[in-house]
Length: 358
Ligand code: NDP
Ligand code: GDR
Image 1 (cartoon, rainbow, N blue to C red):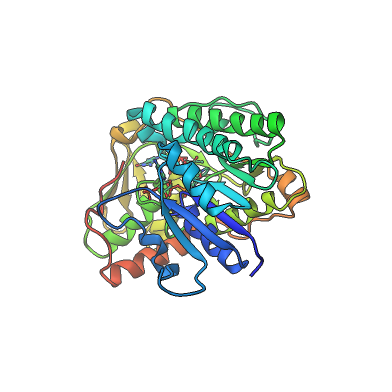
Image 2 (cartoon, rainbow, N blue to C red):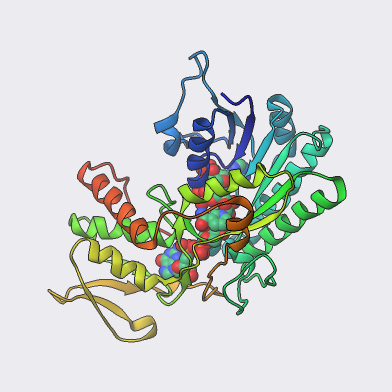
């Protein structure tokens, strides 16, 4: 045990899962919040769940909501954390166009509520703060690769809300001396990635198609390009930011870019299929080279009103200051996700609605 206590908002999400595992390995007492739900909403944590009746457990879960400032004050006061990682968010870019006000409340004002709770409880001097900032802040910016000095040009209600959270974190650092850092993280995925993000939507669908449970994969913009890494590597970077004497803002990225089409091709290649692309725009389709069967169909519903075409990050500052490196390549990431989703299919553990997504 290292004697430190951490509080994670968004513990039930992808990054919350990997960060909880990392901090437990490092000997932390790890507290997380989950929002109320009438069904279980901690599926990812099942593997590391610790029975509250067992003495000496180091994983603790509290009810709170980013929309409820009082609940955040209550949990922080009870936990007295050395480090807070703010991972909670309405994190889906497409959904933020449907629910901009809700997204702003959770992602922007939620971060403000947490920072103000630290001040209210007079914990500025001892509690360090991590804000889950995002490459989406760069949005339509064309200078590439993007680093900490690149201008922001947000292109969605999600990115605009995260921009507020980013700057309010900087402001609390400068105005009140809080050890507060922004991790400007480029896309990172894993076998426990939410099923509505494009990477996991693809790997689940390919596994379900191979198992004969799904007909085809419906997608939006195949031309979008992203810098995709593994969540396991990125949570290590979050932790390293809070171990520095001085707070700061850091890009975490792999520096390599691939299109959604590349992701689809690699996922199908994993199960021995090659695709031929025919047609253009909304009429484009991906056909199985061997059988001619249509496996990928474009559905305009998955296009966004304003798209971010290409994000590629330069993590030189994190390399130099934090000694951070990514270890998982794009190819290894797709292989790991495909392997996991095929296993899930074989074990017949997949939840219903293989084609359900945003
Ligand atoms: P997820 O969507 O997997 O997890 C989001 C978490 O936030 C979940 O635990 C969710 O709870 C929780 N949450 C949502 N609304 C509330 C609320 N009102 N009150 C309390 N908790 C809430 O995201 P990721 O793990 O992928 O990402 C973590 C953070 O990093 C997010 O802030 C995201 O925006 C940001 N980010 C992610 C990147 C990525 O590529 N993954 C890249 C850059 C930034 P529930 O389980 O109940 O839904
Ligand atoms: P993103 O991730 O918007 O980058 O945000 P997502 O996987 O949703 O989209 C990546 C790209 O794929 C295109 N796309 C599709 N996306 C989805 N979800 N579904 C589809 O069917 C589809 N077809 C094509 C999208 O248009 C987009 O260009 C993620 C989130 O984790 C954010 O919280 C985080 O801040 C950023 O990454 C960095």
